[in-house]
Figure 1 (cartoon, rainbow, N blue to C red):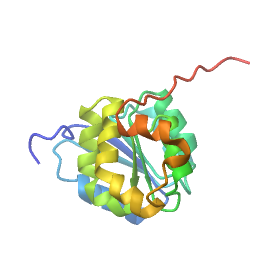
Figure 2: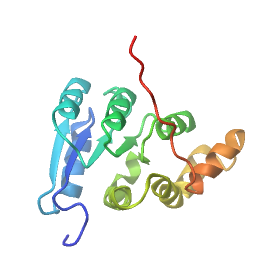
Figure 3: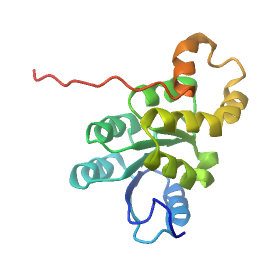
Figure 4: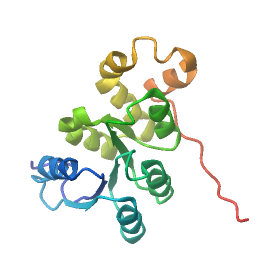
Amino acid sequence: MAGSILQNKRILAVDDEPDVLDSLEDLLGGFEGLILDRAGAYETGFHLLRSWTYDVVILDIMGVRGFDLLNMAVHRGFPTVMLTAHALSVPDLKRSIEMGARAYIPKERMVDIVAFLEDILTLEHGSGLKRMFQRLGGFFNTRFGSRWMEDERIFWDRVAAGEYLPEPVILLKK
């Protein structure tokens, strides 16, 4: 897969399902120089996030405390993707975006992970979210119903237009 921005990148994938990690390894294995670090539990993922610099982090939500790891990855400046099956819901999608995730991908669309990762590495944050919505808008409408965005129309319109950026988080010492 010559010429891909994924060549020579270091990616961390954290998921408690070994078959998901195996699938990611298969999908990303053809890129020259790409290193895929794997973690099957929160503790291992936490240690790896503290120990290395990553070009992209891929996190499951359930089973590995994905939101805690997302918080850490975003604070370390790593573009992060949420990859989920069991937490596929509007509140978890919104929370992921608000916390700084660059994409929220259903595991049943994992086969398209390369395109999502290339977008994350080449597009600005808001533009990447816009592209995600272009790719997954029909899926979300089918999964959540055609009116799923109505309760928070302004938020979702900003995300879909590529205008949303998460608020910076300032940590204060206690």
